[in-house]
Structure formats: C-alpha cells, structure tokens
Length: 533
Image (cartoon, rainbow, N blue to C red; front, side, top):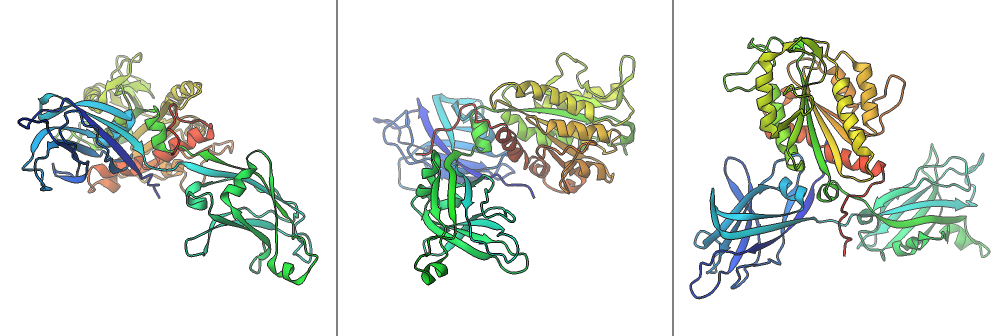
C-alpha cells in the first residue's frame, strides 16, 4: 500500500512593519494558522503567543502541522492585534494575512511575503516570514556483527545462528527491535550490516538497556538459545573505530558449571549513528522536482471529434487526459521553482509532413518544449489537438528515454539537486513492451519516477505488469530494476472520487522513491539539516 510519508512540520513565524492599530502604544500581535478543509471553509490549526507592543514580532511559539506530499495543503496565516482576553478573533483588529500552500513553504524552506488586508489590498508595509523545519530525530544505528566459537547445538552439523536485539521498556519488558538473517551451519558467523532508526532501537536514549540474544534456528521446533548478553546502546557505540566483544552467556549452563566461560563471543565489528535523510530533508535542502508530461495520441483513443473518444473535449472543455494533468500537476508544481514543464505527445502524425512521432513537443518547439505552469500544458493540449492525426503504434520507450537522458545529465552532478517525475497518460494499449521494460530498468538507476495514469475502459494488464507490484520488473535480458520507480493507476477508479484523490494515489510513493535513489547513491541533501540538539 502507499507509504504515508507523514511527517510533522514546525513553522517559525516573524513579522515586520505591522500596522499600528493601538492609540498611544504599538500593536500586540498574534499569528493564527488556518488550514483549508475545502469549499472555502477553514479550520484553525494552532496560534502563536501574543507579543506586547511590537511591530516586528518574532513569535517563540511554533506552529505545527502534518505534512503530506501528495496533497495540496492550502494554508492561511492571519495576524491580529489582541486587546482582550477572548479567544475569538472576530473582535480583534486584523493586521493582515497571507495565503499559500505548505508545499510552497517547504520547497523554499523560508519565505517572506507581504501581508494583505484583503485581496490586492496590502496591509501597509507589513510582511510575514515563515521558516519550516521537519520535526524528527533522523539518526539511525548502523551495525555489523559477527560471532566466534559458538556452541554447537545440532546433533548433525553445526548451529544455524541468528541474533535478536531487544530494548527494555519502562515496565521492564523486553521489546524486539531487530532480528538478523540466519547463517546456516556456521559457528563463526558474520551477519549482514543493518540499519535501525535510533527511535526504534533504543527510543532515542543511548543509556537504555539492550539485550542481544543468539539463537540456533531449528526448522521443526522453536529455536534454541545459544546465549545472550545485556549492555546499553552507548556501550555498543564504542565499536565506532575498534570492535567490541561480549561473552555470549547461557544462564542455565553458567549455573551448572563452575568452569563455564561462555558459549561463544559476540563481536560488534562496527556500530555508529548515521543520519537517515527524509524526503523533506532533500526538498528543504534544495532538491528541485522536475515534472514532464507525456500524452498518448494514438488511434485507439478514438477520433477527438467524436463524443466517445477519450480525447473528446466535453462542453466544459475537459476530458480524462486534462483532469489527470490538473490533478497531478497542481501538487508537483509547488516543488519546481521555474514552473516550466516540458510536455510531449506520442503516437500521432504531426504537421507539416504528418510523419508519425513518438515524442513531439505539444508546442511544436523542439528547442524549448516548455509550458508555463500546469495551465500552460492544458492550453498547449487544446491548441495541438485539432492539428494532429491520431495514429500509432503506442511506444512508451522514446519519451521515457528522453527524460532518462536529462536525468542522466543531472546524475553526473555530485549532489542531490534534481529529481524527475514523468507523468504518462495513456489508454493502455502498449506496442513496445520489451523496449519499455529495458527503459524502466535503465531509469531505475537514475533520479526519476514514472507515473502512468490509464484512461478509458481497457484492461490495463500491461500497465500493472510495468508497475511491478506483483513481483520485480525485469528487462528482457533478466536484469531487475534497481529500485521501484513506476506507479500505475486507472483513472476509472477515481471517476466518482473527489478530484484530489487521483493525485494522492499516484504521488504517495514518490517521496520514498526519491529518498531511495539518493540513498542508493549515498548522497546527502545539498544543504543538510542542522544536527538534532
């Protein structure tokens, strides 16, 4: 299911040059944060403290809000001069407000904007400055462990050891936080390096007791304990530079035998804290998300002049293609500073010679295929539709390769500054499935994600196959994708849903895909967050 990359964002607010409403003294301002709940209704999220006699307040109370990449979260900031004890702001003087989306704030990390009394009426010279921080401890424990001379538990052959790590809860109970893989038939095993968030591992407290137990895996019965030891996370961390060893003790054996030393030694080869960067770390650290659209203009869509065609524009000038562009584009555009989006069509005969093209710019300008904003894509689509002839075949790979070339150029840069999202809207009849598989496998090594929205009533078996949710997608030569980059959704599932639902479904996986790419390349954000205090 879609990973909800919900994080809390903390907003710090300050204002400058506020209007002066109090006779004889300066205003006593407070800032309130409202979030849109649709249909021009707003609900209060939180408010700052009131600062007395101040036209340039810096509020110490931070405002907190849940962040969802896949939604357009509309916010309204209101600054009021508070002259009474009532919580209701209706009886207080309004010093100005500002509306934006949470995406606009996090993609800039810090913004300063003029306050307005109402639309197009500035509140004097008043401005508001909003700074965003993600609320989290992003550290994780990275550890590599081996063991020496473990007790032999099996009649035939050696033990099959694995480790379990536990943290001690407040009530004294032990809670499992990590289990390693089993290593068969080996009394001197070396387990794979693993990473666990600091929060999971020891609730963020390095002095918490940690218990490490070594077991012998038995297929038919429950596993036998070889031995265990208890220490703290801080003690394990001493293995930053040199390995740290612990006796692996079996309590029963220790009781029975005076000369008992241990049932083997557990050796922490390496253990240290590392930052695990989140989607917001990359975006707030300066990563641009570049949005490209590819539109299927093949004959299987039907003649655009006929009402049963998928490209037919209804009396309101809308169809499923435009709805999908709007829905996804409105979310993604907040993360792209220049708002210039390349938009292409494929599978049509294009003027002047009516040759078939599998990647023609909607604006017919190959040197500059950019549309200004989502609105620009919609306008270019409406202009191009009557000028082309829908044809075929339906080839996806040229447009995927086009974006991959640009992404490969960006990947040459040694920083996490660019990521690419390609939206392909199609009726699902694909001709070049094998080439497309290869293009996706190549793309999985690049800073890109592909979103496919299927319009119309086709059975989208091929699209579901490309999505790879039912198994790892491989190229024809058997090479698997390096990471999952394709998300497919059929538009018809959202026919009766609110218009935001489509974007929420297709974009929900993008944050994890972006993080997985930069993690695979071992890249920190361009401007990493300052360490947790």
